[in-house]
Each structure stands twice: as structure tokens, then as C-alpha cells.
Length: 219
Image (cartoon, rainbow, N blue to C red; front, side, top):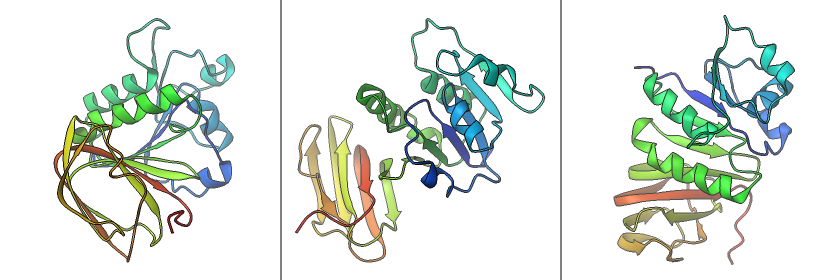
């Protein structure tokens, strides 16, 4: 079972390349999901794994991959899962169970973004942790006990993705103690991180944390 970190370039809008160039890629297992191959190419990176049906990446880029260096998994155009879901499933089969960072997974179509985050929540138990990040925000599904180090003043929301969650928050402007929050409730919208360390304990269920980069917008 591999604990090497995995970095996945999904097929969404990559956002700021200035941000992408600050990510540390050395030592990680790099995955290109269809259009993500073009983003990796622009950054001068070579994927260890390509997964996709090829409908949003140039044939020249795909043909130019060194099959000795990159494992290429070509998917059918007509299928029951997204390219990213197929990549997640394959990584589980490969026992690539360390931490995962997903880039280019938040921007672009809203429906893709929502499905991507639900996909991450479904696979949370298969990896050490799963993070989606771009220049604007950091997004992580959470369950169990989590120690965070968000900058003080960060605006952060916790979105239940199971019918009900039981949640405790310390190190936030609005702490909670074993609060039961229903899916669809806005009770955990727009909290603010305080201090150096925050604790999020999800006693029951799963939440998706969305932390916005920059100063808090709450008075």
C-alpha cells in the first residue's frame, strides 16, 4: 500500500497558474485526468498516470506521452461515470492510499464541482485525506477528529453531505459542542477561524469544509 502523496489534475478550470506554480510536485504521484494533461504540460510536468476518454485533450498531447513513463488508461466516450470518478476508483485499486490533492477540480461547471466534492466525500475513507485547492479556496471532506491550522480570520463553512451530522468546533468565532446539523441547514455557514490551531470533530456523518483564502468577511 503506497503512502506517496497523489496530485490529481482534474478536467475543470485550472484557475491561477501563479498559484499552481507554488505547489510542490516533487515526490508525488502525478495523475492527469483528460483535460488536466494540458495543464500539466503547460507546467512542464509529466504524469505517472493518465485517465480519460480524450474528449477534452488534444490528440497530439495524448499521442506524445511516453508509455514507458506514463500509464495510459483510455476510457470509452459513453460510460456511466466521470473521468475523475474512474481515476479515483483506479487509484483505490492501485492501493494509492496516501494524501490526495486535486487541482483544477473546483472551477468551471457548477454541476461538475458539486459531483467532484461528493465524490471526494464518498472516497474519504480510502485515502489519508483529500483536498481540493485553487487560488481562492481550500476544500476538504472531513469526518472523525481533525486538527487544522487555518490562518486566523479565515472564513470557513462546513457543509453536511450526509443527512445529519454531529459536529464540535473549537478555535472558531462560533464554537459548537456536539451540535446536530441537518443536511441543507445553514447553521455552519461562514464561521471564522481563530488562533493557530482549530479542532473539528465530526462525531457522526461527513461535512465538506470550504475555507476561503483571504480575510474574513464577517464583522
